[in-house]
Length: 446
Image (cartoon, rainbow, N blue to C red; front, side, top):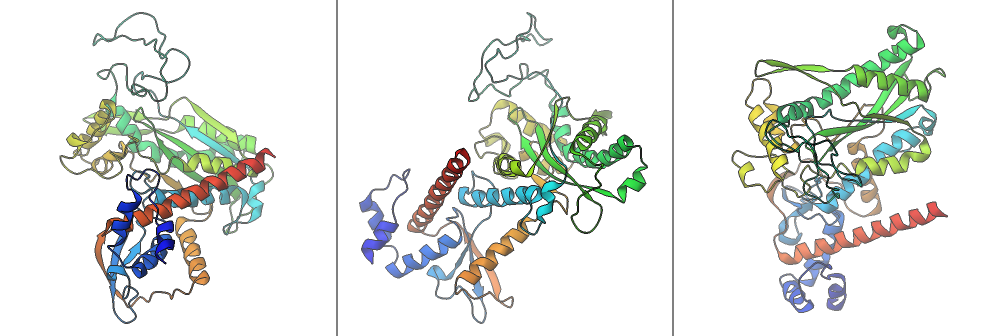
């Protein structure tokens, strides 16, 4: 038994522990406890910061468990907080996107034939910023701004360059406008989905009220927080029949017509916000892209969108949580991002803008990172319930009764050996995912 445990409980490649140190830590628990913990951390997927709960009542499932607690996955979507849970969130998001394009997970396979487009809308310019790429950053003529800084930059920045995304002149940059746009982007997208149907009616030369009874636009939207401190939105818009079932729209609604309607809607939407006694008109940027989608592209689009869901603005984990009073000054952030966060925090004191302080860590973007219309496809909750039902059916685990009383004990692991066990499980899952993706690429190449 001991030899088997030592083979299963191995330090991950990045661990500084030696085998002897690992054996020392293993002595903190009995072999029986380690075997039991191994099963529990597998159920959490190797979560790095599990929630420890204790149940009291008849048939309590925490009785007999190590330390008398149950380990529940934290379910964080942030890679910097818990990579295993973020991987699960990412996989669920891929299923939600794919189901809306090719069917499955409760969606009929016929949705694959519905007109659908992939939309990318950008933020307007709030001032020139350093850009990556093979060409010079800003090859403008000689000259300086009103603050004495050069208007041009002839450097050829790489993606890893810390200057990328930062303004050429921070004093010229419109930080207020950037934060207000981030806070309004979700509302602008909502108006796009409304205006798109109006423009469909216009292009078809039909009354909007009449078309509303025949066509419904289902959508999914993902927010990307860029290094320059503004949000870009990527979305999928699908045309359906306006009925309870997910049926195809009338034949006259084509992918080309849907694309034209969305382009017109993006150009038309705006919102006016009054701040500090000045009314500002907020719109999307001029760079808009609308591409037709087919069911064969569902897997690639799903992976592309899912990668944005587990990241935060700084890329270091400094902004993966809501900020508290006085915390910002201690965070290690690039100066440009710090200015954006500070602007959002200070704007939170304005009347009607209190949400900006709660979402300062998201650069003022107050929406969820991924939203969808009700009929686009399945939901995270439905996927989690299906996974739970499968696990209960595959094991002898009893369902937990509702009459139990639960108490929060803490988060994380109580002993170092528990964390090592979880990291081993997480590493095995990462390796399995890598092998799976490699096999899929080989199948596609063949």
